[in-house]
Image 1 (cartoon, rainbow, N blue to C red):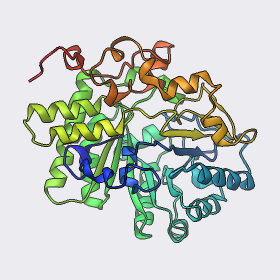
Image 2 (image 1 turned 135 degrees about the vertical axis):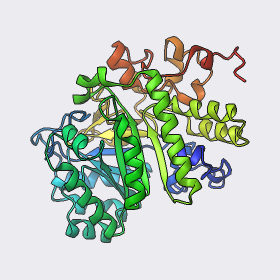
Image 3 (image 1 turned 90 degrees about the horizontal axis):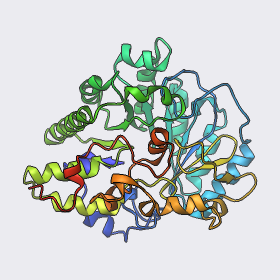
Image 4 (image 1 turned 45 degrees about the vertical axis):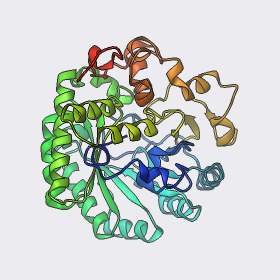
Length: 396
């Protein structure tokens, strides 16, 4: 994640994570990405079921496959607590379709793990929102890919937008922090300004703009990814709209996700603008360390299978029903996993010679493999020019 509001707008300083020793167990949630121990945030796909048919679903959600039982889920939460996992993101499919979601959230919170939900929002009733709020749910990210017409075309269900908005209202009324999740592609990137307008009018305090990853159903959308020029223009728009909100005193957090070229791009823009905070931002980017697949983020699927992240399902690492999570995640005999934890040593092509490798860590490996059939190949979504990545070039 690249925090636009944190970095460009200065809502976080390099001294902030340093005050906590950059330890995951002590850092507040908004600073976790700057930890030095990189205890993994776990995306737990608790169900394969979904009431929508999203074109870009990374999990290819479908009618229910074998899911862990409640007791198995509670055992997993205990394992994750013992390992030091700071956050569990309950996802799916659609997580609210599991009747025991409140039980799992309650167990996570009581274990001292921050519990958050990734949802399409359409099934979040007033009663559900109040119950989850009472249990201590920290946050719900609700997916919107544009305004009504565009969003419903992506979701495959007419009325999905209106139902999601009602879910947003219900969560906010229950004092649950709400954020929007938007996946950028050629079919909807012109909706981004409307999303910022929606945040302002509805008082939504957070938005995450995801770059497209060509996995799951999104494999069919590879040709719908933005060109490099379109990506640069889109990131500039997100920066500009975020900056405008912050300057007006709006308390908002805006992030881009799944393209770590955004970090150097922000820094280079600030240098070009002669922004006095540019070097401070570079310090934070180095703390962030770029792509954290297999290190600072991991995934447990509905059947207990562990993956390096939620997008990369062709590289199973093991199953928690057979081995403890800690044994899977730190297995020195798993050559692929060990390489992934040190991915900067194995990336190829322009990634290998890039001046920003310590900041980006080779960008998104699942997307690189989808495009090149090589997990260590170049990520085609990197939009930095050869001049921008060349250490020998003087940019300013």
